[in-house]
Amino acid sequence: MDKFLSSQLGAARSEVKKYIRAGRVRLGETVSPSPETRLDPAADAVYFDGERIRYQAFVYLMLNKPGGVVSATRDRQKTVLDLVPPELYREGLFPAGRLDKDTTGLMILTDDGAFAHRILSPSRHIEKAYEVTVTREVTPAERDALLSGVRLGDELLKAAALTRLDRTEPVYEIVLTQGRYHQIRRMFGSQKNPVSALRRTRMGGLVLDAALGPGECRSLTPEEVRAVEERAV
Image (cartoon, rainbow, N blue to C red; front, top):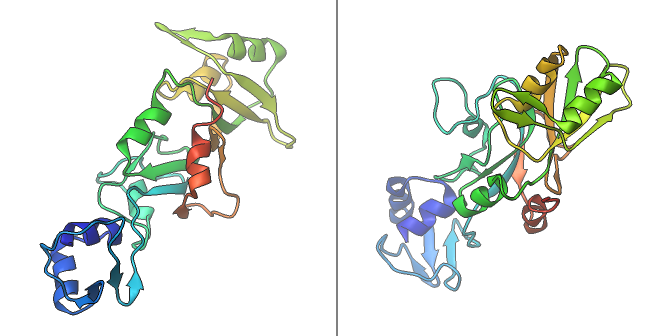
């Protein structure tokens, strides 16, 4: 019981035991069951403060990552997990993939390791789309180079697509199926066209929710979780 409540409420097991002793937990008709009571999470009715807890095996969150926050579970600096509100937090959450400190936009936080492995596996080639603001317009020759691949050291870095967005500034959508370190910044840097802003807008078929402000997050729907694995090449 205490392990189940800890996983669903995002509270430490010591805190959960206090809830039980305070009479805030009910299993069926039994008030304040023992913390060691065994149960079937999918079948047994567990109530906390009068509301039934709907069992959720894993948590999947969409975060609109702001700049200045690191993609880590622990750090001396502010991390993406520090942005998760208490009602959505669960022990074991981690970022499924990383964005560097200055990159903003779509991130997925989860405690489902198998799911994270699938969407991050290089063999799956799941598309990731970004809005990139560069210093100047990309020339046709530079565009061809980015699409055919630029060799940096022993790596061949290439874009799957590059589209000019309808902005007054030189802003492009770039789509990757690779996942190399600082890939976009390095690619444009090789063309002497530095990146001034970078925002991830899509992973697979999952698009960043326009209603989420910087630093805000929400749960993904089951359909959205499945959509992440769409558009694999």
